[in-house]
Image 1 (cartoon, each protein chain N blue to C red):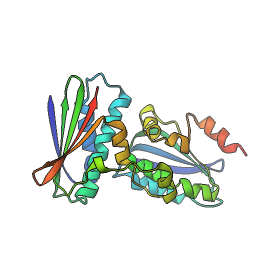
Image 2 (cartoon, rainbow over the protein chains, first blue to last red):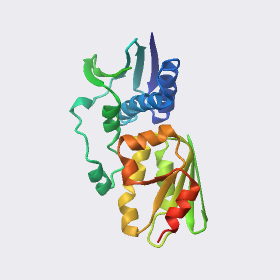
Image 3 (cartoon, rainbow over the protein chains, first blue to last red):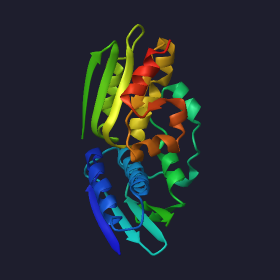
Amino acid sequence: MKNKLQISCNRQNLKNVREFIARSLDGTKLSGVEINSLVLAVDEVCANVIIHSNKCNENEKLEVFTELKENEVIFEVIDNGRGYDLRKHEAPNLKEIVKSKRKGGVGLLLVQKIMDEIDFIPYNKGHIIRLIKHI
Amino acid sequence: MVKIESGTADNIVWIKIDGEVDASSSIQLDESLHEHLGKDKPAIAVDCAHLSYISSAGLGVFMSYIEDLKVNGQKMVLYAMNEKVFNVFKMLGLDQLMNIFDTKDQVIEFLNEK
């Protein structure tokens, strides 16, 4: 079963993304903690797309697709902005982040910890970020 | 959406977070913590019982003050997190870098230790 959500690139819409992901995982055998982790992973990717790829430009849209299969859950985020290849993201050192007093930088690390597969696929003028979790 | 309240009692600043701390609301948590930061200021205890969700933006706020707190000699503790929220701290190993407790009694005991 496939579901779709489209939002404009405004941070306040992240709540809608989280509700959409939680709803699409409703009825699966996943625990509350597992569902929260998957919601978090998609939230982090969308926050990244909104803030960095589209500079919070509300005229830009992003789309989120979910697909439940027997042994895996697939999330796709379609970003029409300039994009950032998550796979090339080097895991930051936590102690260095603490030392530098930086307020960001751990979102993509969380995504890498939560998801089993991360793909970055060119699509139209942007790209698709595909996240897969084996269940 | 998040609501943050704070008040001082027993020489401890009690901060209560109610709601979700994400990339859109983390600024409010940041402002509240920043206000209570400083040398000779009391310890900070953050009640997370009604914190229903946290993303990296919220974690980033807590992490960004660890150094300042150390320099100030000021303690900060978080307590009463639900399992989902605690799991997010744990995924990054922040449970090892920060003082996280289950109950308010444990917080008071910890902060009263010399």
